[in-house]
Length: 79
Image (cartoon, rainbow, N blue to C red; front, side):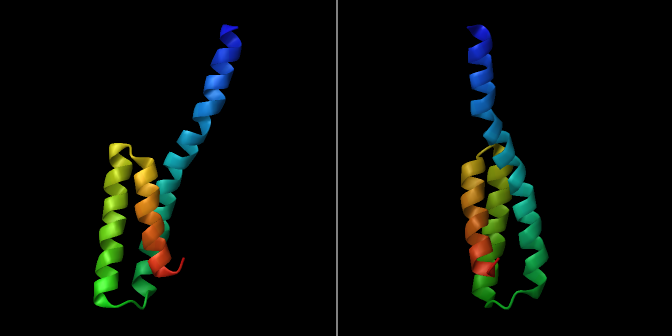
């Protein structure tokens, strides 16, 4: 019984680590796209703000918030 509970718990928590690891790859994609982006100064400032917010949220453990901020930045960059 304990083995089944342990396995179920591991399977339930496994996706969390996968999502946590996607934040750095999203930040890298944003960093790579920024130099070639043709955005207004205001939009570029917003992208950089969202990217910084995403990194801060990632470091504090809020991966859902980080994904949301980074996703919005990627959308603005068209990636």
